[in-house]
Each structure stands twice: as structure tokens, then as C-alpha cells.
Amino acid sequence: MSELFYNAAPNATRVAPPLPKPRQYPAKPTDAYLFGTCVVDLFFPEAGLDAIRLLEREGIRVHFPQGQSCCGQPAYTSGYTDEARTVARAQLALFPEDWPLVVPSGSCAGMIRHHYLDLFKDEPATLRQVESLAERTFELTEFLLHVCKVELKDQGPPTQIALHTSCSARREMNTHLHARELLAQLDQVERLDHDHESECCGFGGTFSVRMPDISGAMVADKTRALRESGATQMVTADGGCLLNINGALDKQGHAFRGQHLASFLWQRTGGSQ
Image (cartoon, rainbow, N blue to C red; front, side, top):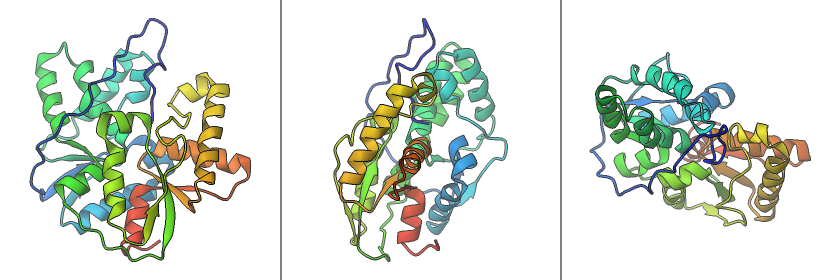
């Protein structure tokens, strides 16, 4: 989910991690884990399957531990550190092999890569496990671009799209840059810039529940900018934002919709709809 750092319980302190440093990318592996995220699992399961299809097409065996659940981000950014640690600890046990962990959500990938280090900073033994997992955690578009080094062949008709990237995915994982570079490989797809492109959609996980009026105003700005961009649809790599934006568009009575980037890429490159 796309979480905001000011969305916290009273007396909670959250410090945003430093901007991502350049990574040393490994060679394409034969095996990888997929962390599906709770939002994809519950609301956009086809996007999770399309992420698996994209990876398998690159010759990677994808492993999906059935015990996985939430990454712990909603509790963490709401100030419930103990609860977040409990959830995160359960996830750590599911990925024992030294395989990359691919996440079809920049915000969830950022939680695992950056904030697990904070959660377990006072547990030296666990912290070593967390550091190993953090180093091999990749958001899906980053993994496709820099590890798989995909060369996408567009098989769809000409179209114009707008790209939305969640706040934390943008600031923690540079997902907007990876997505732009992948989309640029599709020669029949024109990406249109839009106002409010770098701003929050208003979801922010529990923020949208705690401050519904502010959240509603933010998503109204976001949906208006998307519709006025001239694009035929929006794509995003974050299910929480997709859920919020599509829900607002539906309530407003507009036909304009968003789609998860994994599904968009799969369909544009020959996958069935």
C-alpha cells in the first residue's frame, strides 16, 4: 500500500529512509520468489499471475510461498511497531533460499528493503537475515529492467497512457524511472505527462480512513489530472493506488480506468487479456 510518513499514531516517530543508492545488480537467476502483496492477492490477483507470467517468460522459476501475507507496512506507518514486527517476522521465515524476492508493488518492496532494517535494528541475529533479504528485494519493473534486461516487443495498437507511481515507490525504489524506461520500449505506447503526477493519490493506507475529507480531495485532484491528460487509461505498479483511483473514478461515474502495470505489460507483449 502507498503509505505516508505523517500517517502515524500519536507520539510515533517515522523517518523516511535515504534516497536509494545505485545498486549492483546480479545476473539473471534461475529461481526467484514472488511476494504477491495483500492488495494484489485480494483485489488484483490477475496482476500477480501476470507478474509470474512475465518472469517465467524470462526463463525464471517462480516460487510463491503460500504462507505470505502483508509486509507489515500499514501497522508500521501507523506507529504500531510491535505489531508490524510480528507480521514482518512471519514473512522472513518464508524466503530462506538466496533467491531474489520480486514484489509487484514499489511501496511493499520499499518496506522490505528499507524499513525492515529499522524494525529489527535491536536484534543482531535477525538483522543479518533482514539485511540479506533487503539486498535481494526488487520491485517488479526494476527486476525486469536491470536483472532480466528485458527487451519488450509491443504487439498492441497505438495508445496513449498516463503513469501513476505511489509516493513511497517513487521515493524509496525509483519505481517511476524503471516503469518509464520499460514503457519506452513499447513503440506503440505514448506516455503522457499529467499534472499532480508526483503527488499522492490520497490513499496512504490508513490515512484515507483517518482523514477521509483530505484523502477525497487529493484523489479528486489526481483523477481530474489523469482524465485531462488525454490518455486513454492509467497504469501503475501499486495496487493500493489502483484501488483508490479506480474506486474514485467509479464513484464519479467516469469510464476512465487504471490497470496494474504487470497486466498492461503482459497484454501488450502477446499475453492473453
